[in-house]
Length: 298
Image (cartoon, rainbow, N blue to C red; front, side, top):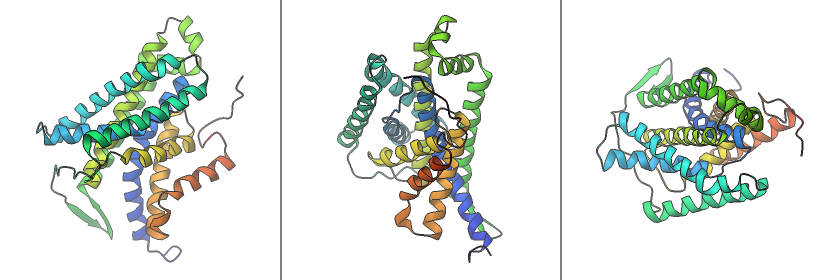
């Protein structure tokens, strides 16, 4: 017994928190990659997550494509969406003050969300059941095949993106641009191409998170990106924004914290806990858990 709760209850919520946290981590990776390259908080990222959920939904329901193919299609369409957003909304403001890009990001977010309300309607849509749910009980800890799929797909994508960033030539170029864009350009690296790749990868990961949320919770809406995006941004800051492992760690922490608060404290604090964790972490370590404080010339 721990604080009046049975250990099986704690392990149960830990399993649930890992499943939810893996989705936050996928979305947070998009935030942290874009910020690491162009120092931009892409507030439209949560709405790309929403679009990814709908891309997958229509691929399965209208085109009758199986889930194993619908997710790559959703990721590809979201990657294209991210590239279009970067080319039309952010690239023209590359040399503008950061506040201009930030306001533009908020405007793009509102535009996508309202287009979603117009095109997809405001009513929630039930996500198609792609497999029969099977539940196992191991020592009082209950978990399902849907949780295993959700966590497994998220972990696979996080491993792949980590290998891409740290083990490939393009990943090395990406890290070089993040470290010093001007020096990277002098070394022959096409920074515009790297930025496009970053937006495409981040948007694809967000779309994967959207499809997994629809698959797991069986419900999507045009406004779902707002809170998921905000919590994922908090996760990226908690872990250390601009740091890939930090986004993963922050996502897992946010998922576990949210599930534990709902289970053991009150469901009304479900959204507030994210910002409480953020405040505590920034008070103790302002650069995030894996971040390092650096001096920035202004």
